[in-house]
Length: 443
Image 1 (cartoon, rainbow, N blue to C red):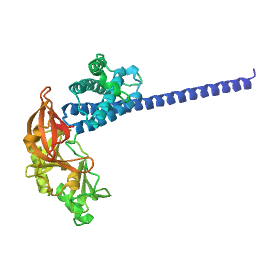
Image 2 (cartoon, rainbow, N blue to C red):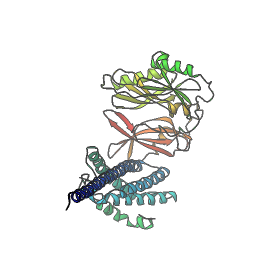
Image 3 (cartoon, rainbow, N blue to C red):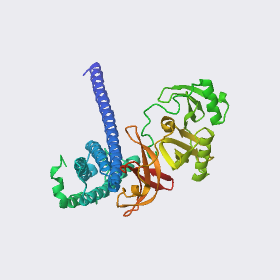
Image 4 (cartoon, rainbow, N blue to C red):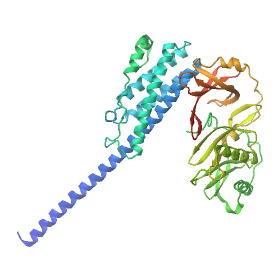
């Protein structure tokens, strides 16, 4: 071979090797990107499953404590919907490698049972004792499966990858055989099967409407709003930066100062919200002091007559729910959420949309039944602790005058709030109370 031929052959060989190398690298990059995309999809599905199982557990708990056919019917519809969503999320996961076959079976049985109960209640029939026990059984399994999936989410958060088969259900004792056994006594029941945070009560139930408080108030200029914002923040107006107008259901002027963003309503010149993007590194005051600071802030800024109900502490900020109170009646639609810096006691977050949207003087606040009559409407499995009158919003935009009865389960000790319509005695809603060192939450 001539020298030129040798060079040509070597060049071809090098070019071929280069092409193979580039092709190999390209395939590797593509495979890695595909695997990462698959991992992301798996994780999203696992999070959806975790959220749905949490909602299923909540609705099953409410079903166990409910004493109203109407309420149970609504819960059964929600249960069926959540079970369907969870099954769809589960279908997108590599079920076998995660040992979740029993979860799928549980969701199928829960969805079908919820559908069966809904059809029975809608036809005017009542739930039997055996069926009530079945709900308790489903609740027990729901807690186990929800815990197992939450554990897998935690594994992912700690670096384990689903695509590497490192995320598994470690609760090997989980089984749905017990559910089927418990249902055998009521097998006849199943023959008609079609196919077997923190907001506090009613936080965002009716925000998609015109703001009642500001709709008839005078418009203000941007300069007037800026002056109001500076007074609230305790700084000179020239320190604030105007960031524009907000054309929402409650039109506002928006300003920035440091880590804070504040919105002032165009009508009425009221504070609508206050946001905080900084960090609070330590906790020096108690929750009682924080609640007092929040109360003073509301009074000073024109939001009087507010009573606190629930609070939670996160990232050293105490978030407190306030609702308007008059004549001993809590008006839950008129909600304001206040966040207090637990280091210095200053208010750093505020959300007044619920109050601005819903507050007005109610006139029909006289009950049609007394408290003792309302007590007879709660489930026999519950023991009443105390109660009060309140107004709650419904999803259709209406409001209901209710007795809010604080109860405790005779069996488990769990605490719940049952809302009995003060006009006709119907059960309107149930909230589960969750206590921790960081406050009280409801769901």
